[in-house]
Length: 493
RNA sequence: GGCGCGUUAUCCAAGAGGCUAGGAGCCGGUCUGCAAAACCGUUAACGUCGGUUCGAAUCCGACACGCGCCUCCA
Image (cartoon, rainbow, N blue to C red; front, side, top):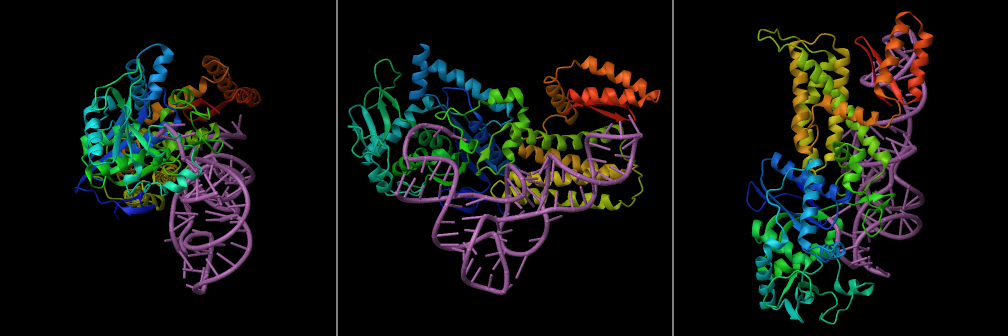
């Protein structure tokens, strides 16, 4: 089965065939760096991180470009507000973005260009557009004449008349057609500027992506991604600019991730219902956030709520607990003897063996179907269940059993590399979750330990009444006691 | 107003003409002095109304409800 990708341009899943066999050129719209990133940015980041990782896993040589928009009205506004220059703002939030994305475990793109490093390329494209009659200078600005490009709006599937009917488009005096958009903006006093044939100014928003993608990936490339909200106008305008300037197809596969919702409404700056990544990471582990994002297919909307995050954490704990159990056995048992007799596996063992054999084919099948990581997680959970059963029912670890669970362990490492999960040793991850939960309770750990000792003594004396009192007392404070042959441990409920 | 998307059990969520998705939860059971964890079992679904078909949650049509884009947005 070949990789199939949903292409916004055609509205269908298509078999992925790269321009150059074995290679993939991929561009994803990054962020405008004027503030901290919210969960919506996290989702887009993770969605295309998975695309990037899986393409590499599938054997492609991927060039992944993700830009920083470091010149824009919003950045200038923020700079004015703070009485500083645009560069200070841009650099600050580039750094913040990098920190956030690193915490979320995003693989570094091949290149992360900045718009302001590509002013020459931007000007070159605008010149070409002007020369071909697709753009016109107007009082220091340069606009793209949308009516000169027959394919305009082919990505979003609309037409100009309909757009204008209910449109809230400002009809600037400088524009020939209300839908025309700025390629170059003349600078007002005090604003940053670059020299151009049309006077001092700065690039419009859409043109930078055309320039940067072409510089690194060529005039035609394979994959372009971004949030659904970029389909119009941003990506539509990129197509118009690039295809009119170069006379060839711009992008072959357009991918768009769905929104993050709050109470079924889109999370956005203007609605004010957003959470920044840093806020959320104060309460939840980064891998939990990633796991949550992967719990819905990348094109579907996903509802952000504490309940859903908690559920994601519970699910991830289930997997990590299984991995921790495997590690404990694998680390404590001596390696299988070379002269081990080939013994037969039990019924559960055979079942697990079958799960193991099917694991990668099923994983690949899920990911090949438009990067369906959510379905892939289902496969991991099924394997966890069978593994747990195997561990529970296997009294003696034979060399064959050990080899089998070592294989299981390896499969989680292998797929974890694609999903960006299980990067932490399970015991450490679980301990981290435990201590994070412990921070939320109002009883000190040494007090808990003291009560456990008291309870152990009581139990040893068969004073179960006192023992249960202590259990109930701690339970009321959210502490659950776990008795085992090795002694009593505790965890936060 | 135009265009597009969605509606799956208690909740989250995949799937997509006949094949156990998965997770969380509930309820029973094994284990335990009692619990917990783990395991086992169980539960339950495709918005409404029509149509196509041997067979529809899946395809087609209408309707209802929700959401998104049409202004900057991931």
